[in-house]
Image 1 (cartoon, rainbow, N blue to C red):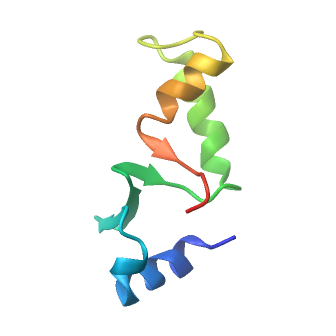
Image 2: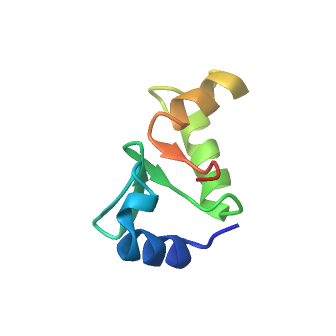
Length: 77
């Protein structure tokens, strides 16, 4: 499991090894979505915020997760 810094370093050293990733404003974008390490505490916070938001709140687990994954990803690269 790569850390954020390790993946950043690898992308900078050999961007062709990660063609679906870009570095933008100190973020790693994977297929245009912000990449988070899979054990990040931010994921739980994002799930809670997306679930409770006035525009998309209380849609259920699957819909909330789908909506969140339109902008973020934490899957293995």
